[in-house]
Length: 280
Image 1 (cartoon, rainbow, N blue to C red):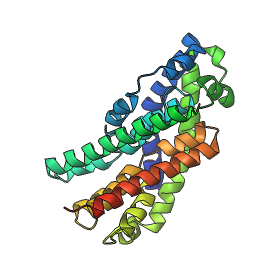
Image 2 (image 1 turned 135 degrees about the horizontal axis):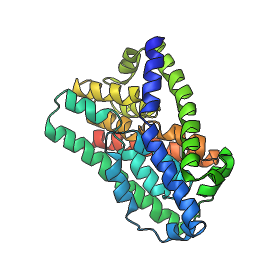
Image 3 (image 1 turned 30 degrees about the horizontal axis):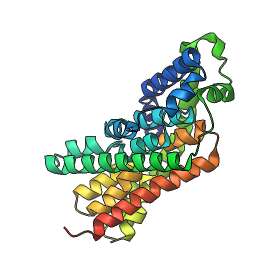
Image 4 (image 1 turned 60 degrees about the vertical axis):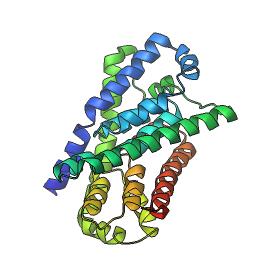
């Protein structure tokens, strides 16, 4: 139990700098630009998902958490959010490096995740522009909903937001770690290994677990030859660290959150199945 508590606390503490910087940026934009930020978003560079795809491959789940906050405040587009979620590497890259995986394998996985994230993000934003689908919500909405008393200044307001989310994540992470402890990671391994086509479907579900255990299991099984590249990519694409948890916490549109979750899973599994069907 002590080990579970320690892991849960450490997982949450690692996110604090990213969450604080994201909220600090949001508070600054709210106080300095006001409603003008909404007009700026509408004119934002259409290539922003490309930047998101590149940022996502950095081995820190804090980027996905920050992206969820920025999307809830409508600072970034849905396409940029999806690009970051799909390219997020979480614990994958450190494990690949520690296991001394071939450099070409590491680069292949990172490039596939980044490129698919970029393409998906650009397409999603293009479709939304064509449909003239406007996202409701703003940075101010989050501030009001969390009762942060923003008149105290951007630093204290950002600090308040950060610890509110950190406590929420600590509770959820503890519950997940407890579940994985009693269930055992070997059970996950048995479910995923050596199952053509069904492998990507199951791996995608494991990838959605908002905890590093999913990416750890998937990466290790792939390196041990028990998981195909297609199944591994399905799980790694669907995995966004704790980004999904933060999204459900800060974005009040639950229906939209479920659609984003389904989109993330569908793109990951679809790409994984396609890779399995392709020759070579």
